[in-house]
Amino acid sequence: MNIHEHQAKAVLKEFGVAVPRGFPAYSPQEAKKAAETLAKEAGSKVFVVKSQIHAGGRGKGRFEGLGPDAKGGVRVVKTPDDVKSNADEMLGRVLVTIQTGPAGKQVNRLYIEEGADIAKELYLSLLVDRVSSKVSVVASTEGGMSIEDVAHDTPEKIHSFTIDPATGVWPTHARALAQALNLKGDLAKQGAKLLSQLYAAFTAKDMDMLEINPLIVTGDDKLLVLDAKCSFDSNALFRHPDMVELRDVTEEDEKEIEASKYDLSYIALDGEIGCMVNGAGLAMATLDIIKLYGSEPANFLDVGGGATTEKVTAAFKIITSDPKVKGILVNIFGGIMKCDIIAQGVIVAVKEVGLKVPLVVRLEGTNVELGKKILNESGLNVIAADDLADAAAKIVKAVKG
Image (cartoon, rainbow, N blue to C red; front, side):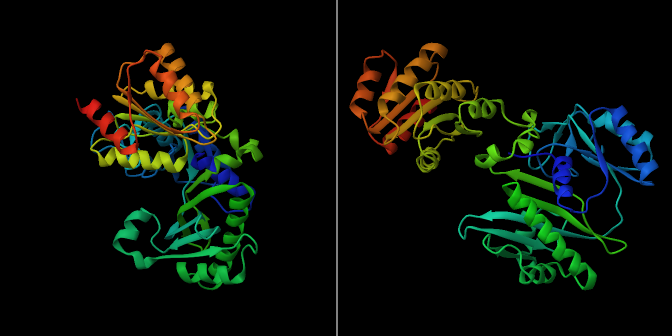
């Protein structure tokens, strides 16, 4: 689960992390009031109007309906009236960035923040390293840029080290961070403190990604978190109802929201073949083989090992609700999940929503013969497949005509 920048900064502030003052705003009037408050209480003479969407590249993004010379999704202005006029232009418009894709995302909220005196921009992130089962720290002196671009153009400027959860942050980690970010003297001490604060937030809230870009050195030699992105391990959200309350469903795909109600692992993709599979590994293999045979998957959907007829029916409905889907591939290896349950779920779903596209079903494993019998006697126009390669070949052929 992802949250907005202003929410991420509020979470980090609870752990003592230094962030600029700011207020979320949902209307131009609220934006102006926020700027007036910053001017009065913090003496701010420069304000930053930030679009709040779950995507990076906001500053270089473009708003649909505005000319090519229009400003992006992050704007620096000097008066509360300027804040209001920019907010009026930004709210309700679709912002297209390198991370949103051409469809973009509608801006429904802004973050009005005090300006900062930037002397230097740095990059810092914490991630779950699933290979080592540790927390990986990635740092670079090239802040303010896409870390992917830095990795491509100047990989030697990216440094990383891991923190063992059994020990937590040690002085050696602080020294490694100071060396990676070229921090000296008091800045190195601030970096050590910041690393401990970020690690505490990361582990306490079960985050799987925390990115600070940029982390800045101010004109008076202070470290300040100027932007923050947080994502949380969805499997641990039951421990954090306070974080669940921060979820913004307007930023998520409607089909993914519906899938979460049934505890289905669903991710929307841009292809034309809908997939229903049990098991994440088999699902990934199914996506790969669809591409191998010349088409593109429309989704990742893992119904899990203990799915019921109700869950399978819901999964099928979600797939068919995608207008891009031109064919459906059901690929089930029956272990805990029984093939007859899948067959029953498919039949129930088809009777409720209809079947307007080709359907290829490959069943193998527990109760496979019963599952095939149920499908054969259903009267549905189902294309049977013997193995995964056969299933991929048949669904791609059916879709391509």
